[in-house]
Structures are given as C-alpha cells and as structure tokens.
Amino acid sequence: QVHVVESGGGLVQAGGSLNLSCAASGSILKINAMGWYRQAPGNQRELVAKITSDGDTNYADFVKGRFTISGDNAKNTVFLQMNSLKPEDTAVYYCNAYEVFDEMTYWGKGTLVTVSS
Image 1 (cartoon, rainbow, N blue to C red):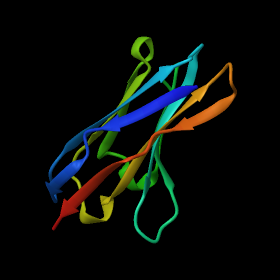
Image 2 (image 1 turned 30 degrees about the vertical axis):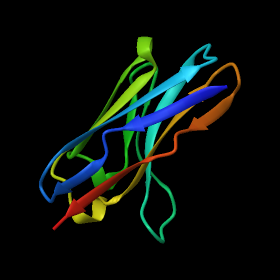
Image 3 (image 1 turned 180 degrees about the vertical axis):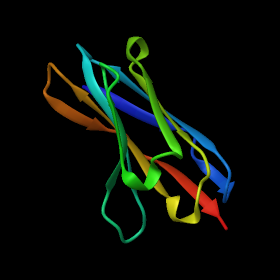
C-alpha cells in the first residue's frame, strides 16, 4: 500500500504564488511518475503537470510558463511551484504516484487552492 499526501494549499490573491508538496510513502519499490491534477466545482479532474523518474515533464497548456513541477526521486516527493495565479486556478489539487511493482496509481486526498480576485 502506498500513501500519498499533499500539502501547501491555501488562500492567495491573484498574481500571487503557492508551492504545493506531495510525498509518497509505504510499500514502494519504485515510483515511476508523479503528477498533479486539479478539480474545480462542477468540473472534471484535469491534468496540471506530471514528471517521470527520468525527469521528463508534461504540462497542461493553461499552466505553461506559470507552474513548474519538480521532484526528488530519493524521497518520492514532487513539488508544484505555482506563480501568477489566477482566480480560475481555484480548485482542489490532487497528487498521484505510479508505483511500478503494483502497477497502480495512488491518489492523495487533495489540497485546496483558492485564488481571490
């Protein structure tokens, strides 16, 4: 079993910044990829950014140039630096981790980001 825990959400004004953190722990052989998704009320969950253990990254178009994902393989952690935040970035941000041995994706419970105008 792998546990995924996010932190760092909160309330910020438009134009501000937040840094989200996510840590995976438990029965881990190898985490091959970790990612951030978000879900706003009434919307489906959508990809924000993801990173592989090789350091390859992928971003949603709506965050390119504003958000940066980074990771620490040794600690099974991933970070999301969010700059130039907009009210439309308001959502619950979820982290996931793909564990190679289980061939499963584990999700955290999410952290709320609220951007005020």
